[in-house]
Length: 110
Image 1 (cartoon, rainbow, N blue to C red):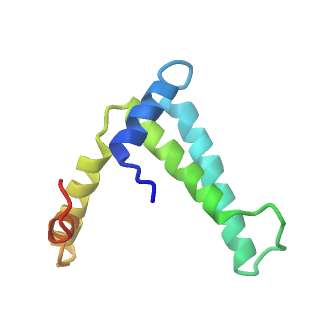
Image 2: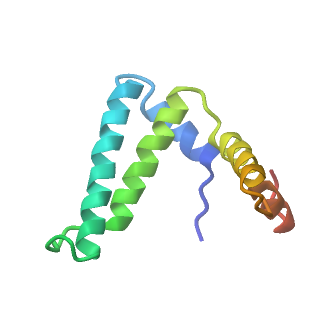
């Protein structure tokens, strides 16, 4: 099974977009892709006519791609940011385990 870390994806996208794309241009693409996710969900849930080309998987991958690209261009370490944000949410909503605890309990390095 192939594995991909946020760090690897961020390094790749930072290289890919180091010239020629601004965060705002990538954000416009992200918004477009979010709209495409909404379109596919509407089709899957019967609110719109289904097209043969609709793919939730592909549209979600596009959303992740542009989100990670924006983070990369702005020097945001998504691994660190996600763990920190999850810890705050776990405290706020009194949830356990938090993501860091879950990873540790499953033998993952942080």
